[in-house]
Image (cartoon, rainbow, N blue to C red):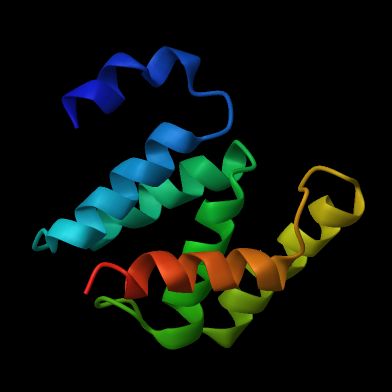
Length: 108
């Protein structure tokens, strides 16, 4: 994570926040749910597509100790689709969800 801290100043697309969250999820750090949500929300603010997809999955499936919320998941998906229609994202929402699923399944 030291390297991620060093490049944080050039974090234009929320990559640092997103990959910190991925790292915390991967190592299974206990009691990190709030930290992970904060990092992914930072990534979303910077329009990082992976942050949108991970937050969607967390709320849609009730991952970690986060309560399942279709309402929150749909709000995140709709925000992504809105930005996609504005041309902010190069790939549709389903493609980003597939990518996140591949990332998580390849960790096993």
